[in-house]
Every structure is written in C-alpha cells, then in structure tokens.
Length: 330
Length: 255
Image (cartoon, rainbow over the protein chains, first blue to last red):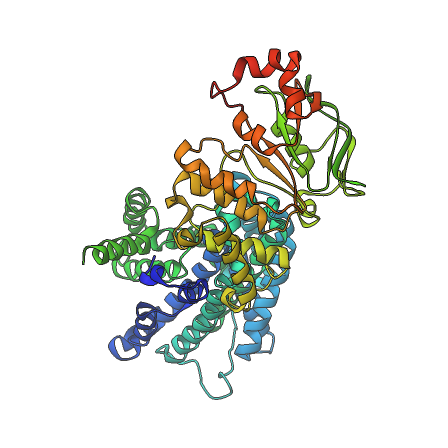
C-alpha cells in the first residue's frame, strides 16, 4: 500500500506496516480543534467521539474478522445501563463506572461469542439481530430497574478524579470521551498489528484455509467478539455518564443499524473508517435534521447506496485509492 | 518400521453414492507416493477424509502410531498432517510474507497474543522469509497475494503448508493449471522438499507422476484398484483401460 514495499528486509517491511504515519498524527491533532474552533459544539463532539468508539468496536469484528452484526447496540446498551445504574444507586465515580460497563458488556459478549463463533453470513445477521431485540425488550419490561420508555432518571456523576466536573458546555465530556476513545483506539491498533490481528485477517480472507494451517478460528472469533463487546460497552457507559441519562434507544435496532451504516460509509477494516464515518454521519445529522428529522434518512439512504456501489471500501477506501493513484502519477 | 500415515477400512458415502470403500494404504516414512484415478474416483474426498474436512462413516486413520480420525482438522495439522488445495485457497489481500508469518505464528502458539506487534517476533519473521525464499518467493513477498501470477500462487500454497512443519504432506494437484513456462519452479520446489517429509500427491500430469513418485496408488469409483511402482502401474491393463488410455494428457480435470 505504501512506498515501504521497496523495503529491503521483512522486518523493516512489517514494522513499516505498523508505524504511525503523518495522516494519522494529523487526524488526532485535528480532534483537538473543536476546543478552539467550535467551543459551542463540544457536546456534539463528545457524542461523535462516543459513536466513533462504538463504530470502532464494530470494525474489529466486521472489518477484521468478518462477523456481520445487526445487534451490536446490545453491548452499547448494556454498558450504558450498567454505568447509569451504578451512578443512580450511589456510585457516581466515572472511571470505575466505565469499567463496570465494560465488564457487564464483556461478560455477556463472552457468553454470546460461543454462539456467534459457530455461524456465518445470514444466520449471523439474524442471531445478532435477535439478541439485540431480545435485550431491548428485556430492558423495556424491567421498568422498575431501567425506567422503561421514560428512561433512567437520576444519574448523578461525580467529578472525574474528584476535580473535573461535567459542565453544561461539554468541555469535560468531550475531553473525557476523546481520551477514552484514543486509549481504546491504541488498544485496537495494537490488536490489528499483533499476531492475533493477523490471524483475524486470515479468517476474514479465507476461513477455509485457517484450520488447514492448524488455527482454531472459533477461539479467535470468541476472543475478538468479547473484546468488541467490551469496547461497545465502554462507549455506552460514556454516553450514560456524559449525558447523565439512559434511554431505551441505547439498545434500539436503530442504533445497531446506524453504527453499521457509519462503518460502511467510512470504510470497514481500516480502523479509521468508523471514526471518519461517525464524524460525517453525526455532523450531517446535526446540520440537516433540524426541521424534519425523519427526512434526513432519505439522504443517508441515497449516500449509502452510492458509497456501496461506487466505493465498495467506503470513503476511506476511495481516498486511499485516489492518493495511491496520485502518488504513482507523480 | 511404522508407517508415517496409514488408513484402515475407510468408508464414506453421501446418501447412496459411495465415495470411499475399504480404503487401506500405508505411506512409509519419507515416501513419495502418487494418487491417481479418473475424475470422480474419490481422490480429493480421500484427502478430505484424512485431513478431517469430512468424517469417515467407518475406519481408522493412523498418523504414526496415533489414531486421528476423531480429531478436528486443526489438531491433525498440529500433529503434522498437512494438505494443500487443488484450487488456490489463499489470503488474497495479505502479502505472502504476512500469510506465511500467520502460519508460523499459529504453529508456534503465539497467534493468541494481541498485545505485541508481529514484528516483535523476529524469529518467526525470519523463518517465514526463509520459507518464502526457499520457494523463490522472496522477491514477491511484499505484494498482495491476489496480484501474483498463478504459478507463484501455487508456490505459496506449498509455502503455507511448509510453515506448519508437516510430517506428512498431501498435495492436491500442485501443478493444476500452471502454464508450462511457469512449472519449472514448482517442479523444483517439490523435488527439493525435505526427505523427512512424507508426501502423497494427486496429479493428472503423468510426467510429473513418473518423475516424483516411487509408488502409485490408483483409485477408481471410491476404491483402490491397485498400488505399485510406476512401471507396474503403467503396465497394468486395467489401469490403461480405466485411466491412462482415456484421460491421459487430455487435460481433463476432476471436480
């Protein structure tokens, strides 16, 4: 993909694959711009960071291991309700709340992974969809615990490190979400550059060959599904903590579908796809959905069809193609 | 001396179609055997049975002295029984270096590690590169697999199998579809396989079979018709009738 193909040793070539490039560094520096350029939009920026983390968690299973999920909101919602309930019933410390959310999503994700690892394609879509619906309905019926359609009220967060209070402008919320997103991104980045990540790409590229190399694909799939559930849980917990409320919508089918759309738009299997997709999707929704919120999906539908038809690797895939074409001309 | 790989009374049927009946053979350590037979004789099915991609209805498979018929495919590979595929079964978007490194990582049990970079395992990377170089893929190992010429992809099939350190290697038509001008490297690769590896290969190209095989097993209709030296097999009238006479060099390939 890069000019590193001219490298002389296999070590140098593999190291170059994992090295931070300038675009990446520029991207992360740019995430700091809202503090100065759009101080009135930090609440939105924080929601974008949370959605980006959620999309990143989906990318790990869809883009890297080929697991299609239409019910990933299950883990987002589990994280959100766990962190929200912890804060409501007296434990408003954000960082441990985040860990509780991660733990709850991780445990359920691990249990579910034993089913997930056995199926592919349409069966997988139906199973994940079913699990998502199941959990959403469960939360709806446990009105005494979740508040049902009224949402979870009375979530009170303590200041982070007893120092940084969640403010009305979203300064703390965005800082907090961005740092958590970045740390989770580092973990995801390390995973895909690891031997485990290589095996995941192997499963995505050719599941038939993996057992012929002595690999236990199911063990790998169970592991990445659990990791993905943990990250989705962290994203959900972040939303609960930064908005100090949890609505049923965190578990909704719409959220599962949206995150899939975001990832496909941005480009699956390239880590930044979910991040870029989240920025485009959320900013566009904020700008266009003002008067007629439902109408905005008309444009998302059109965009989705266009991207899948003309940019099968998403917007990032299209950009990568463009830049390599430009480079080979120069 | 015990055999490297042996089967006892292997049966398999799909409904009323018998694809393997009473298959018994044994490969001595370090042997070079060819498995031939007309289309639909059950050659690839036999490889699928031995490697665990299909389950036999009856019979036993012995790898060394160890029965393996109950093991899943990946455990058989870990014990040293490895195959290649008639139709390229590769990782199109990975480079050969990544693919072979993947295979070595799996063998070494480091493929579960997610907190260290691949490049931190320099021994693994060196070995992967050495395997690729030995198969003359050193210069191509940084290009995505799908961009490689077909003959090179056939070599990568073998490189992936070698990365698992096989004791017994089952090659399913290694030269299938390789143009003549690309076949020299493939023939050299197979000629250079370590004598520690026991090899059974399916092949339609009789030049190939007579060049590499010390013995030939002929399958017809899910049974072993006979086993013998190349001279014995080519002299046998039954073989001439069912196989050599008809599809020899006609370029017919089985499914």
